[in-house]
Length: 290
Image (cartoon, rainbow, N blue to C red; front, side):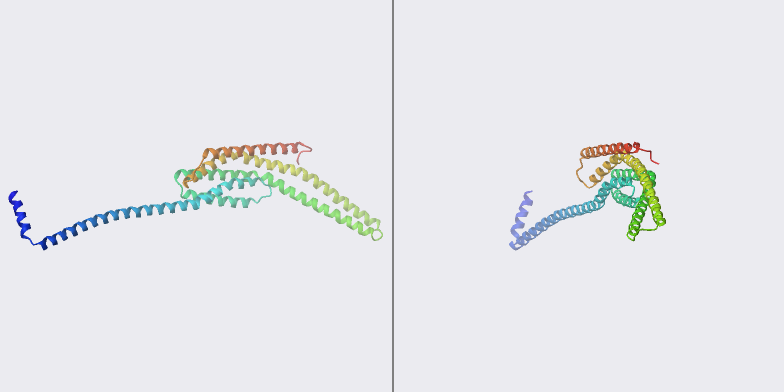
């Protein structure tokens, strides 16, 4: 060790100062290069991590935008579905229009289900199935209501025609009286025509009253079916809404929604019972509907 130490001392003394300056510069360059490489490697890692994070964020944003574009219309359509189904209880509604509106609802729900999780897809599918089943039941139940409504329209048209004939015959008699009267035979003809029109009008009015009772009873049958199925639809709707809001990352108070739905259902049942009592009272009052 002593010989080696002496050798290094002799080497240092023997080498000129310029050499040591060059060696020092070389050492500084090497250390600087090493430090830069280490810094660059660290920066590269940070940049890579940032790019990966940004890419993940952009992907999440794209996914959220896609879900927002399909789930929000689906939520709106789902809330409109019960309103559309309720219109099946209206006698003069165009069923083809209602079916088209429900098809649009199903399309929006299907679009949401296509990008949803398995749990959300299951909830949406069950809700669609419940809506479709009730749609078929309501459409089938409309037959008595449609028949009564068509008959009532016909009777009212006939009553309107008879009333218009009476007015025309009265006008004819007044014109004849202004011309110093009419021939007895002609006056008798006009009076017979007037009595015939009056009899037709009275008959149509009576038939119309009975048909109104029939129509009310038929409407009540369809409305009762709708109200009986409403709790099941509400349950499926609640599950579907909660699942879609979860997919969107929105807070959902399922208990509050369930409470609000129960209140609405109870209110609907109360209205239905009041309507049922009124219609039954009308049907039992007077002659039975023909």
